[in-house]
Image (cartoon, rainbow, N blue to C red):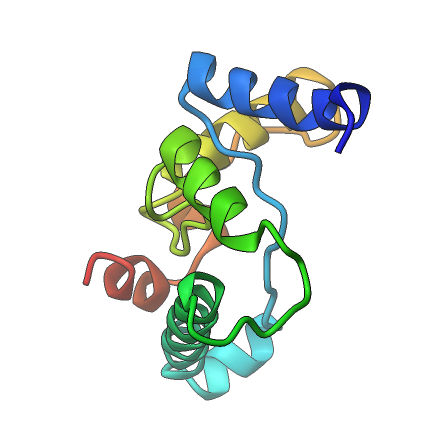
Length: 133
C-alpha cells in the first residue's frame, strides 16, 4: 500500500491515540416495543455479537490457514493491536462510554439533537449491565 493510501488510516490512528477515543462504526438498534415485550432481547443480542466477534478475531490471527488471501493480514492485525490495543473493536455500552459521550456531545454542540444524552438514555439497563461482564 502506498504512503498516500495509508495516510487516512494513519491520521485516524493518530487522532485516536491523541484523544483516547475510538471511532464507533456500528451500532445496533432494537425497537423499544420489542425490548418492552422481551427484556432479555438486548442482552442476548449483545452476548451473541460478542461471541461472534471472539470467533472472528481468532480467525484474523490464525496463521495456520488464512481465511482470506490478504498476504499481510497477520502483520496488519498485529500493527493495529499495537496502535489501538488488543481489543480494537470494543463491544459494549460501558466499554465505549467515553466515545459515546463524545459522539452525543458533538451531536448536541452541532444542533443535531436538542439535549445531551446519557448512556442510560441510549441503552436499556440489561445491555449496560451485561457489558460489565
